[in-house]
Length: 141
Image (cartoon, rainbow, N blue to C red; front, top):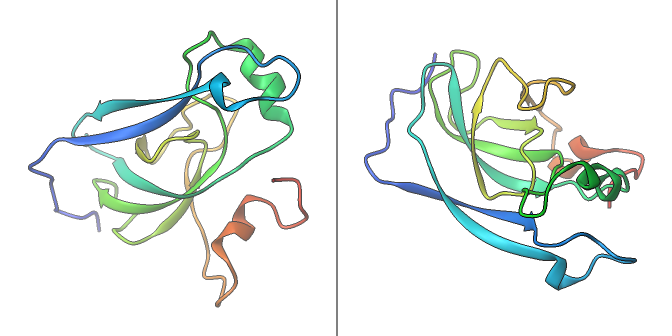
């Protein structure tokens, strides 16, 4: 059952964006942090808080497709803070293609990018680190 909790206050996320194109190794000034207000949840949406972000070799090439100022792409492990989706409850841990941001409003049925999977719940790892959901064999940084 979806949570009936609804927020009464404005919620902002912080996003890491590509401030300028990478030349050689990415540097601190190639990134910027911007704040953005999140909209209230609609039906079948979830509000998630980042726990882990992926840092993968493909990101450098993937970001070449986006204009400067675009949020960094990538998988994320997040905790559900609010839900209007019957398959996700508050406290669930999920994996989603949410990029590098602190909070995300996501549709629980659809991927934000058509070629990716929609968010999915992480099974109980029985004490193992949640970060394993990003890549057990070391593909991620």
